[in-house]
Length: 219
Image (cartoon, rainbow, N blue to C red):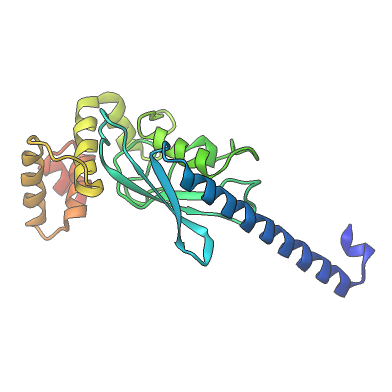
């Protein structure tokens, strides 16, 4: 044990120096990863620091896959790099609202194996962003983050696809479809009772767009 080898002040100095070295190595690795990431134009996503002075809080952006409910939507993911990186995965959550079994429709928390134990030293920011993007079209409803969404996905797939497409349009800037007219009318109906648009959309989505059930869940 290091604490028994050195006098206490030497031990504290030793630990402080070790922490400094680890932080410096982490900073260099993050800089290298971000520089390499910037040169790869074929990934369909990007990662940049929110502040140039802080490489531990990163903004990931990607466009949803074509021919999916998330087509042409732009999705923002917040990535927080902990002191344990690269030995442990960063923390990540969606900032853009998304309707998906493995992503919380409220908090944006992500249920993904890479973030929850499968992380290895060979993994990096590029594999993380690629995995998060792929998750949108490779849902795991049997291991959900949002159980009601997973139930809709498994049992009422057409309703799920329409709802996910509507969220893609409203929150991620995706394409607007004519069939959304009826959804927007229902959102207005709920909002007239004093609820916000976000509250109305969430309640309606959770209840297969039934105004009656949405009102009941909000009251």
